[in-house]
Amino acid sequence: MTESLSDIILKRTTLIVRDAERMKDFYEQVLGWTVSYSAEMELSGGILPCGNPGDRVKLYMMQGADPDIAKIGLLEWLDPKLPDPGPPSHRLGIGNIVLVADVPDMTALMEKVEAFPGAKVHFAPEDGTFPDPRGEGTIEFSNAAMFDPEGFFYELYYRYNRPNPEQFLIRRTTCIVRDIDSTLDFFTNTLGLEKIQDSTMDLEGMLAAGKAGDTVRFAVCKAEHDYYGMAAGLQFLKDPLDDPGQATWNTGIGSAVFVAGTKDASGLFDKVKASGVKVTRDLFSRAVPKTGGQGETQMHSMGFHDPDGFVWEVNQREDGK
Image 1 (cartoon, rainbow, N blue to C red):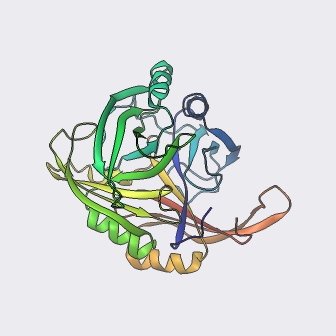
Image 2 (cartoon, rainbow, N blue to C red):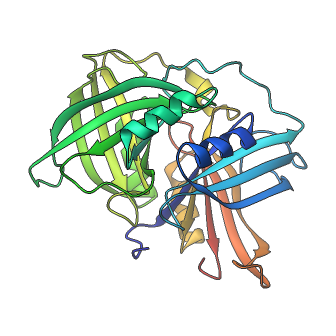
Image 3 (tube, helix red, strand yellow):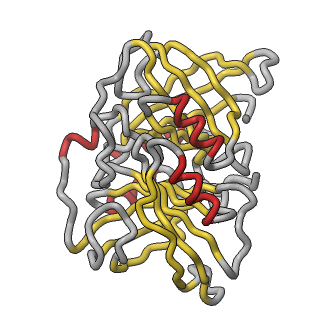
């Protein structure tokens, strides 16, 4: 992994799900990922603003091409269960995420998605072109979109005139927000991410939100890698999406949690507090197993909402892992 260029390293996006086992199967059988960690545990409480201390949960960490970043967590409450909001609506709004991925074989992926119970192809593959954001000519691509069995949404890309990954690669998590200026201010000035793209465009109809022709503003921020492990914001300018208000601060099944690492937890927590966002757990320390299971190390952790209610867990391990 490359040296960190920001205050934080985006390790993974954790999805709170009804059935972690089914989602693990989806990631293994459809996306070709592997389990890097699995555990059943009791929550200590505080970082995640849902459930209660002592709740029993199951966590899978799913790994793609990179062993350290751009991973997915699958978190299920076992006892007691979280309230089930009902079947996925297969529509997105403010407070939802879009997982944007590059794929090694679009045709094979679509066949696997269609065959997996509960998964859904939302937008069949279509070819197109767009200017390379790095100014390196025009990218020719095929793009598609799908929902996983829990209703999380993915934009998918295969590039004809650029290298494609050997394995399904989640490049970024895009947050649908009400105020992208506030999002960018928090991402850059509080978390230390670097903005690398900021564009206004009209939608063509692939996204499961709004409608074709809606005008959106879209911005991408990077952490330690300039192609994946990134966070982004998307705001509908014309026509704006309905604002769900306080509901975007309610965390439960269908929510996503950003999990990040930092080299300076104390300094970052000072910035988070100064930004005025809602803190879910003040900075605290605990002993955790070292990577590989030999002995223990101290980990310093915090939890907070960003300006649109998305939850962040940020950790600093003294062993640097």
